[in-house]
Length: 255
Image 1 (cartoon, rainbow, N blue to C red):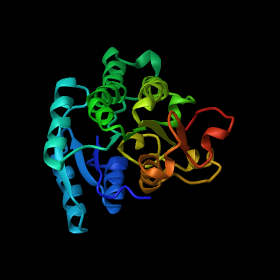
Image 2: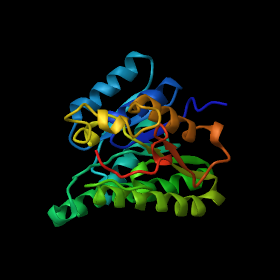
Image 3: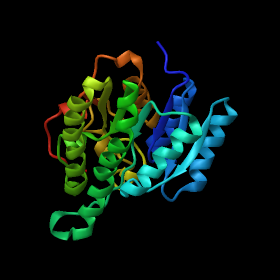
Image 4: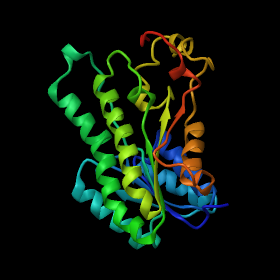
């Protein structure tokens, strides 16, 4: 079973988990569209890396919170890469704060990107995938959407919405041969969680994880690759947790 020759759009693909996903898919022969909003240089760097290893990739600019830009971005991918088979909804932001300190825009902005982006991109690619009768959508969510953590109410709520959306979208898309699943990473050292692991270098957080370490972007990318490929052909509406056992532990969400 292989996904070689397919085309994938990875939102937020210029860095962190998104960049790792782009490289992982390209390694298996997938042509990758690396989406970015403002990090053009980083996106081009990912493309160069893929091309230097014999892969095929392009950059596509677009704000996933803007439905119009998402539509144009999707058409660009299909036009330049000849189709679209896989969507990885990875783009995300965080604006952590305690509830009584949180500005109104802090939760609206996070919801617009983290959930709005998933909605816009899924809605944009579905007609194409449905017409083909095949396709895979993988949403990069978070264990925060199933659990809680102090100062993460807006982020956790946005990921909870992604999880619920994943299940519903899977039900609607199944009869068209399109699968929709989500990966729920735990603590992975990226820009989004940098504030949580500062200070003691994440030592206090690692103590709460059964595996006693943070995850890596490559480990999350491997999970995304699995859900995007034929090896997971009987999976849809699934939330795949990749967190070193953190979600299995009862405890207070304190750093």
